[in-house]
Length: 129
Length: 273
Image 1 (tube, chains in turn purple, green):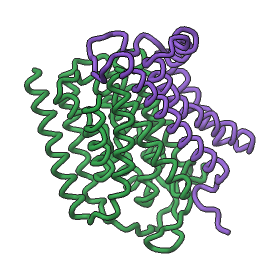
Image 2 (tube, rainbow over the protein chains, first blue to last red; image 1 turned 120 degrees about the vertical axis):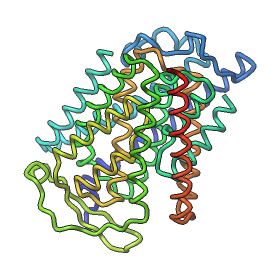
Image 3 (cartoon, helix red, strand yellow; image 1 turned 90 degrees about the horizontal axis):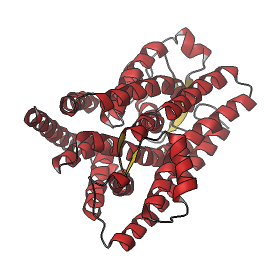
């Protein structure tokens, strides 16, 4: 049997499952958030002027930390929409970690280094901004 | 949000049909309704992860996407995306309208790619592409055979990807058409591998740019929620209809939409001066 693609079928299968699961979870959380939003406000209006409806002044990890420590207890619309957005971003981030572990276990030095570069660059950007 | 969700379904549908992607159409539409361009760019960026990820999952499963080539090119696109998103947070909004219009013009390069069959060329690999084993194969359902390919000009292609990432991060779009052009014409990859690998890279590029926008205060939750759901549903519907349309219809649709978006962004830019 011919090994199609880039020849990394195990990683390809894992990433395919991760992406579809991550997106399904993310969109489900956002949908639940919208139901809560309608229940709380009686409408689904867009607000461009309410600063509480913006994510600001946080890097990725402080955004996740804030969700867990401060907003989790609230159980409101903003929490679920924020969780959905976080799940979406985490899906892509976990994809890099998964690839890094895969290439490291496979002892593929070249792609471990390449993936590590992507992981470090994206992590620095998530921490610094 | 219901209105925006409906618009997003339509936009996701048209984005999938034309290959432009949802955000390229959505951002000009959002600015038409008075959303500040920086908020429109940042909020659309998140939806790109959802729409590209869904399609990417299917393409990887079909073994068309080359993840090794994708991971090599991601080094360049995320660098560009971080720089691009940082520029957007710093410059005056009026420039973004003109940059957006100019970048939409580059989408026309895709017109020549519709209905183009891949003809393998006997090119030699450069040293980096050979060392990284940037090659692969896939089963082409139309040709009913396994197509072998190998990448070349990897550094020049990487440079092209920095530009693609820069535009993507700066304008909140996937820059898929530009990425496909680089992969086909510089890296010499087959169109199907180019478009699916580009789709895979788009998610990582969007994450890099979003990491900048998280801090900037342009991510609006009431915009992101309906956009993410709407564009994903629209893209799924568009992918189902795409194979039933002939190339001429897709070309005409593509030309009309891109021309309208360019006019809209130029108009907004000129009136904002």
